[in-house]
Length: 591
Ligand SMILES: Nc1ncnc2c1ncn2[C@@H]1O[C@H](COP(=O)(O)OP(=O)(O)OP(=O)(O)O)[C@@H](O)[C@H]1O
Image 1: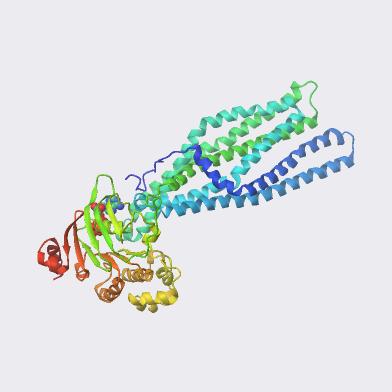
Image 2: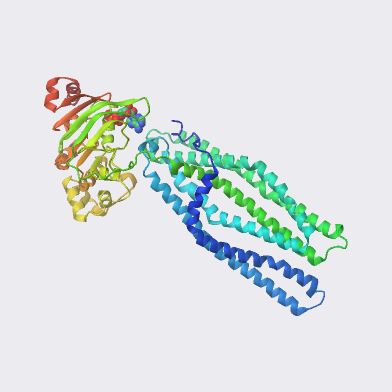
């Protein structure tokens, strides 16, 4: 799929609609009290600041001609007060809105992360993880400015403009109209470049996403890169992506930097017209006080317009990111509790596959009419050629995918009808690559059962023979392991994962190639641990190394999505079929 590449731009499945922006107001509305307070504070600050020019006009036209020093000082004091009040109001507003903005960003990010955790494996399989990461971290950071200041500034600037207009009209109606005449000119300009700006921001977001995806992939694959001496080739790829990113930003900057100078030109033309009109067109000429007040108001009128142009820039940027964020939030969970799903009661561990067929992609059959029953406590091995469908079978028991054809039942309950939590909490799954999280070894073993005591954790580790190597480490169970278990051997990671699974005490256990990375010496050691792990549990074991599954109660040989043979090791060997062939070829190789 094209999306699954770092060098392919993501195509939006649902382009921006106004609903996206309206939706963000669900988050905004949670903070309406603070926003209203901030708005009122801004309102007071703005009105107070606007009275300044009136005091100046009064000083020039009345106090100075009358040489009234007392009035001049009084007006000067008032002017100073207006400055202090507006500065204080700005500060308070800034603090309040920073809290609002970051609160909103926190809420959106939390929803995004919560949703991410419910998405099916296929979502993660189909795109580079860096492209997902960039949405949760970078895009959300980028919209924070819009929510912390953009929205409130937008309202404040509109109020500012209205008040400035009122004040200007009070001073001189014709000069006020000349000042306002520049607005439609600017409006037309902004309308004309709007679409290009949106595209430019989308392009920036795409290039950011691609770059992120490649960096993430390069970090994950650092050891392979060095092994194959790919550094130079990779540097070339990175250079190309980085260049694409640089160009996208430059294109965007060119478009956005065109706005402030346009505002500046329009405002200067208008200001010049105000002075020319005030001095030459009116008879008698308007007073210097009026001219000064109008000049000040005209400059102030264009300030909020310039600010609005900046907010508009932020808005377009925000839209380009919001559409990606909401696209992810809208990604259907697919695997979720269906309506009326009930809690799976404590199970005995009976598992039934009843004529199950399955396909990942429509039309590509992977499982064909699979039926079998595992009795409680029975150990079942799944063997067969690579790609035959073994992992798919065990994934259906945990309902990692929806089952459309046939049924998988656990103790008579269809896995489609019960809640995912009640189902998975009674299962233990161990994969070949056991994921180790950053934190201590103790945290890692306790991962699935947070209320387990230290003694229980240690008992589980002892049972699977992990205790010995853990206590040899300098800080024992408090040893901090790096991300993905860096610093531990594959075998040690597996043993930790065994302990984690045992601690959870699942009724059904799935071991998918779980012992493949354990060396033969360690394997002998863990066989005993595994035997303990399997005791009293229904278990499904997938292993290519057939020596590990000889003792299973039953072996299912899977071939092209069907059960080709079933029986004990002895029965299948006696039969002389596919299993016999596979076993003999392994023994031959080993011998
Ligand atoms: N997420 C997926 N999307 C599409 N096809 C998939 C997916 N996972 C597996 N397949 C396909 O389904 C088939 C069965 O895969 P499965 O992993 O179940 O095989 P397996 O028998 O466990 O193989 P192996 O022994 O190599 O692990 C394969 O052809 C594989 O390409």
